[in-house]
Amino acid sequence: MTQGARDGNPLLTYPLATPGEGSFVPVAPGVWWVRLALAGPLAHINVWALEEGEGWTLVDTGVGSEATIAAWEALLAQEPFARRLRRVIVTHMHPDHIGMAGWFTRRFGVQLWMSRLEYLTCRVTASDTGREPPPDAMAFYRAAGWDDAALAAYRQRFGRFGRYIQPMPDSYRRLRDGERIRIGDDEWEVVTGNGHSPEHACLYCAGRRLLISGDQVLPRISSNVSVQPMEPGANPMADWLASLEKLRSRVPDDVLVLPAHNECFRGLHARLRQLETGQHEALDKLRERLREPRRVVDCFVALFRRTIEPGDASLLGMATGETVACLNWLIARAEAVRWIERDVAWYRMAN
Image 1 (cartoon, rainbow, N blue to C red):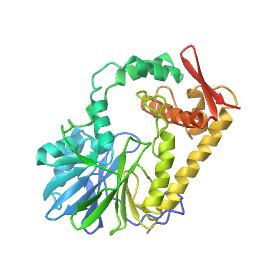
Image 2: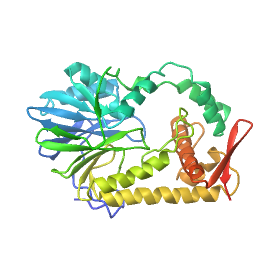
Image 3: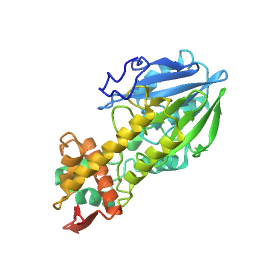
Image 4: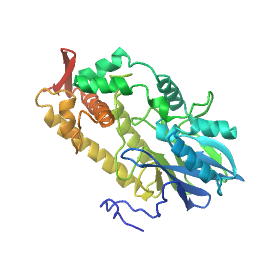
């Protein structure tokens, strides 16, 4: 067992060897950890196979790409994946999780299980594929302080979500918070959370002391919590912080956490406290920054440990969304105020 050595965090332990890309290892009898490659900084996603009688259930699927299809074709020729697939469960709508769901449901004639808001939001977002960005979206990023080059880059890449997912099935089976699902000999409880995505579903097995956490709890990185142009006044940071407390109250500390990124770990409650404390520390730095009027892009230095280059389109978008989430949280608490000058939003502390 490696005790925090992988990240210098003494409160977490990592009891399992990590599979290579395109391979898998057992987590417990009838539970397998599959690691698939991803482009970009994350480099991988973890997905999970659960034994179900003479078949198996898949939890999350990988991004919808030719490389992922090739990886799955190789896996499906091996045990236990050569057995009958019985269903596909998806924690949330992001392409690395839902990307291959339609491929599996069509190939094996099985149903997609996910929460309602995740399914519907995925369908709506995919419908933007090939569209021009709407004026409201351009106005959102202009208000954040983006320059003309950044706005032009956004216009070029808008509507690409659908390129990273296989066509979605036209029906699904809804997952509800608190629902208990029988998979093989085990019962898994659905625990939903918000903030990172609209209605993220974690799966907790009390009998096995396992938590499939998706992106809600990761051991070495924090999940992006962003405001999107579709709902510019949203307060996902409040939802996110409430979801951390919800997990702490619903899931005991002694579980083995099976996250979507990084490694399986123990120390759930310590990690939840770290995420909460880290977020409040970032908000304190933002408060200091807002002693003078600032635009969204002026606040990056307070919230992120790295430089956000205007030319890094993906990172700029995530940083903008998360910064607006923090600002909206302060505004909702009457701690900060916002006003518009020449199409640009400015913020400062209320007093």
